[in-house]
Length: 86
Image (cartoon, rainbow, N blue to C red; front, side):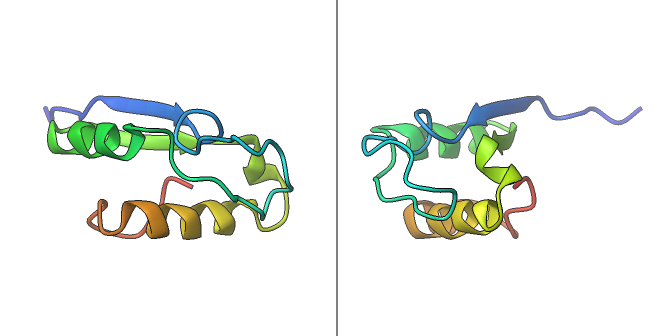
């Protein structure tokens, strides 16, 4: 039997993205990360967790792409591969 990794589910706006400017549209993500969020995600990944980020932005055209771009900008190469969870 294969041991499964635990899964950590996080919301994007207000948890990972600081959301200080409020809603500006699905493709406009103007703010920096919530302080400590990127480090927390990195620690979880290093501890063997799978990290999944959810957002209502995903239902809007361009929302998923915008979140991927934002995560690459702010988290760099934190993930080994493509951002498949989004």
